[in-house]
Amino acid sequence: MERRTVLKALAGLPLFSWFAVSGCTASGVQPAAVVLPTRWVRPGKPGWPSPAQWAALGQSVGGRLVQVQSAFTACEPDASSAACTDLFQNLLDPFYIDRSVNLTQTLGWTGAFTSESSAYAVLAASSAGVAAAVNFAREHNVRLVVKGGGHSYLGTSNAPDSLLIWTRPNMAAVEVLDSFVPQGAARLVKPEPAVSVGAGAIWMDAYNAVTTVAGRYVQGGGCTTVGVGGLTQGGGFGSFSKGFGTAAANLLEAEVVTADGAVRIVNAFQDADLFWALKGGGGGTFGVVTRFTLRTHELPEYFGAAGATISASSDTAYQALVEQMISFYQQSLFNPHWGEQITFGPGSQISVAMAFQGLTQAQAEQTWAPFFDWVKARPADYTLTGQEVAAIPAQDYWNAAFFELYAPEDIVPDDLPGAPKDYYYWKSDASEVAAFWSAYQSTWLSQQLLDPEHQPALVDALMHASQYWSVTLHCNKGLAGGAADAVAWTADTAMNPAVLDAFALVIAATCQQAVYPGIPGHEPNTAQGQQQAQAITAAMAPIKALREQPASYFNETDYFQADWQTAFWGGHYARLLQVKNRYDPGGLFLVHHGVGTGT
Image (cartoon, rainbow, N blue to C red):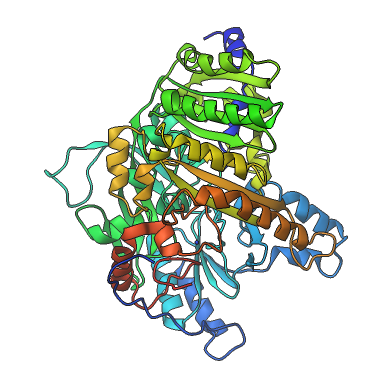
C-alpha cells in the first residue's frame, strides 16, 4: 500500500487510541473459608526475619533480593525540591512506573487505600526463585504480594511491610509456538498454534511477537502496558473479545507456584480445578503464575475503528438520539465484528469510539451509514463532529514503526534509557497513569435489554445516568453476540456466568493523577473525590437497577463493591472457594476481595 493511500485512509487515526481506555455471596451451601493469619509480622516486631534470614533468602534467589525504599522519600524533607518535582513528573510516564520496584500504576483510592511499597522484593527470574520466596513468606508469616505490570485498580499488587515477588524485570520472555499440546494431553487433543508468555510480560511484548512479527492474533488487553498475568487471571478483555473471547478463555496451560512451594504445570488434564480457577478467579489468589500459554488465532486482514460525537439540542432530541443509538447497535453492531465504547454524556451527548475486526473500511463505512445519515438529516436537532471510519492492516495494529510513520500523534514511545524500540503506549491512556481513584463502578447488562420491548427501560436508565456523570458501554466486555467459539471458551472459565449473557459492561469512573497523601502540594483533593464518587453512584443507580443481582468485572470494579462474591463470580464462588481451600489452606495469598478472604 502506498503511503499516500494509507494517509488518506487514516485521516482520523486518533480513533485507534480511543479504545485502549477503560485507561465489590453466592447462594447455596459453601465450604468453610480458609483460615487467615490474624496478624502478619511487621518490621521491628517479634518474628520479623533477621538480617541473616533475609540474606539467606537473597542467596537462594541468586542475589535478586532487594530492600525497597518508598519512591516518595525523594520528597522528604522538602516537597518543593527538584527531586520531588522530577518524581511527580515521572509518575505520568507508565514506563517509568513499569520499571520501578516501589511503584504501581494506581497510587490509591479515596477513602480506601494508598499504594505503599514493600519492605523487600525478589526480582524473580525463575519458578525456583518464586518458590523460594513463597516458602520464605509462609515459614516466616510475612505478607506476600505479587506484581507483574502493576495495573491493579484495587491495589492487589502492593502492600506495606510485605515481601514482593516482582516478575516484570526478568520473566518477560515470549515464545511463539506453531504447534502446542498441553502436558498430559498427548493423543487427547489436536496440536494448535499458541504463545508462551512469561509472567512479567506486558501485552506490548505479546503483541509484538505474535501479531507484528508472526502475523497471528492473541487475545489480550487494550492498554499496551498492562501485565499479561493480572489481566488473564482476572478474565481479560480486549477490543475484539466478541470475536475471540477473553484472555482467560484462551489460556491453554500455566506454570504456577502454589502456597506449598510446589511448581505445577496445570491445564485441563492436570490439576484441572486449579487451572479453571486461574481462568478468571483473580490474580494473586491461588498461587504465583510464572508462565502462561495462550492459543493464537488466524489474523484478520484488517482491524479498524469508527468514531463520532453527536450533541443534541434538547432533551427531546437527546432521547430520540439514545433510542436510535441503542436500536442501531442491536441491529448492526451486536455481532463478533464490533467492540469498544459508546459513551452517554456529559450532557445531551453521545461519543462513539468503536473498534472492528474482519471488515474492510468500505464495509465498516456501509455499516455506519444509516446511523450517520439519520443524524445528518436532522441538523436542527444534532451537531455531528469527528465522524471517522478507518481500517489498517491488522499486522500493523501494534507496530510502532507504522504509527511513528503515519500517526505519531496517537502514541507515546518509551524514551527511557535502554527502552525497546518497539515500546509505546496509546496517548489516550495517559489519563489513567498514576491514578488516585475517586470512584470506579461497573455492571454487566443483559442482552435481553436490547430486545425491542426492553429497550425503553435501557434508554431511560442511560438518560437518567448521564444527568449525573458520563457512563460508557464497553461493548467488547460482554460475550453476548459473540462468535460461538468465543462464547464456549469463556463459558469454561471462572468468571461470573453473567458475562455470557451480557452485551456490554457499563463503566463510570474518575481519578486524580499524580497525587499522593502527605506530600505538600501534591495531595489528593479528598472533598472533590468524595463529591465525584457520589455523582457516579447516582449515575450508576438506574443502570444497576436493570439487574436483579449484582454482576461486576473483577479487574475493573468498585473497591467498595457490595456482595462482591456474587458480583464477581456468581454461582462459581463456592467452587472457587473449594479450590482455594485445597491449594492455599493457610491463606498465604491475600488480596482485597479475593476468593476466601472475607474482606
